[in-house]
Amino acid sequence: MADFTPGTTGTDEVLFAVDGSLGRVLLNRPRAINALTREMVVAMQTRLAAWADDDAVTAISLEGAGERGFCAGGDVRAVREAHLTGTSGGVDFWADEYALDAQIAEYPKPVVAVMDGIVMGGGLGLSMFATARWTTERSRIAMPETIIGFFPDVAATYLLSRAPGEVGTHMALTGATVTGADAVHVGLADAVVDHTRLPELIAAVAGGGPIEPVPAGAMTKGGDLASSHGWVDECYAGDDAAVILARLREHADPAARAAAEEISLRSPLSVAVTLAALRRAATAGSVREVLEADTRISRGLLARADFVEGVRALLVDKDRQPRWEHADVDEVTRSEVMSVLEG
Image 1 (cartoon, rainbow, N blue to C red):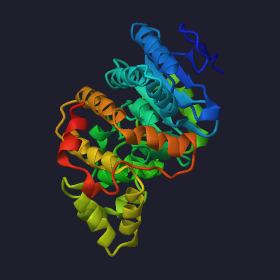
Image 2 (cartoon, rainbow, N blue to C red):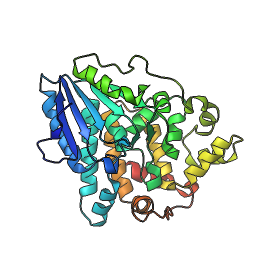
Image 3 (cartoon, rainbow, N blue to C red):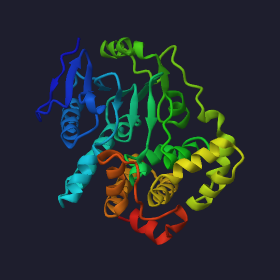
Image 4 (cartoon, one colour):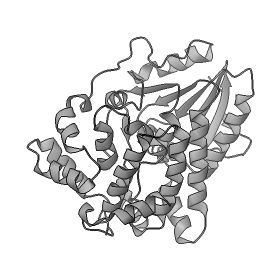
């Protein structure tokens, strides 16, 4: 049994252990599905930097405490509160979070991400650029940010824009929650393993075994998205969010009309900005380049009303009745989108 302890920064919201040759990171806020705080992010940055220079540590694992999931994302309520009080806490959190995501993406040693249970938002930022990305039959994966007036940040658009067909666009605009098999199809994960196998797989890596993105017996195919390309690729083509929404609303497939209904509940500004960011990310040369763009976009959206209102409606008052700036995506102008993209 690994002996997990707090790092040098002192917070017990993330714990660390050296297990054989494996440096293990355990997100430790199970009641909050391990949602990220700035203290957790800084603690991980510090420990990963130390392990990068430690010859006794040859690989890293990222894991979540509890049975509910790896990580539900960043603590956006804290970001909202910081913004409302006029401090820089929200922007500072995103800056540190994106720096950690880049650190993991560029890490000099193999990283294993255990994507069991819920993995959303910032949880994908930690895991989707790892060397081995293991989901399970319990995984529920999403970038749901448009429902809170935000966008799929943490460089998610880098991978979503490179997904087969337009399934990445579908996930980004609707915030759809998908299975581990769907995540493999989209390119956010490598394999689906039975959750009961996770201890033995981690033990094998700790014992000096090879890092296997697809362990023996794991699944790499299946999922609903793989069979949905017909209407998805047809409806989500192009750069105009209003046209996409109209196609979905008018399509014969009920799944397309359901997607339209889901998008209509989300911030029209966020939907338009997300589509533009996604198309830009398709030509980006690196994860770091997209994270730099995400820094500008996050600041641009924080300056608008929909983020504060979206977090209020979903997570603070929980009335699920957001009052968005725009009634529909066709009211969002190109100049508004560009002002957000440029920060």
